[in-house]
Length: 315
Image (cartoon, rainbow, N blue to C red; front, side, top):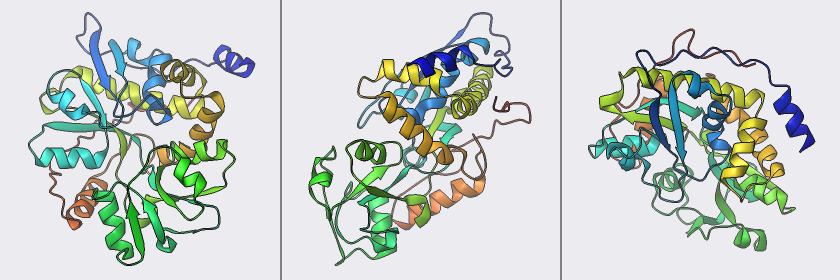
């Protein structure tokens, strides 16, 4: 706790964030998360803690999610101004007529993967036996096709929690770098996380999306820039945002937060840098989803709002 207070006290001045043009009063922006408040949303909480949103003329309220949170539907129904979603979900929903556009990915690399007990496998290609994963989901179909799981892997339902995994050294489970590895280590388990990105499954994650009708609104650019600054700030000084996360999610602990922040950092930056998006990556994701029989709509799914001055340097 002392180190947290010292970090807060020693924070250096924040980067300049331009206010939303023409905004006489703060613009209300409700941000719907697709999961519980956790470090995978650290940039949003950092932007709020550092006052970046306020300085941009935005009154931001972060709405926690959970399993199956219909964030994109909340967005298009007008119950949120921003939905934080997975890139693959956005492309699938757009193919069904949903009008939403990505403006900023929180994580450059997919946090998804498989987790095994240490020594059981070192690559995804080595996985065999029972795998607890969401059956029929695009990710499961992708891995099954790529690695020829038929006759080699028995796909079983995910049970939730680490109980079955802890009790069975031969079990492999679907996991996220932002959750299960640190939770397992906290229980004294030695594990290996096998990133899905190594197999070619690499959708952006924690993607901020807005309604297509809003894409050119001044507040959208202001929100995008403030959030990009928040992600850079979270990498440099996560303590203020983590304090907000601890208050919003009683299941978290300081030790768990520290572990997740450390493990997810390279996934936030990737190879292209914080907040970057490219046509190549979106098209690649569309091709991967189509390869497992998923209908998608890539055209118009994202817009690059970055400018040379819009992503302040980390402090």
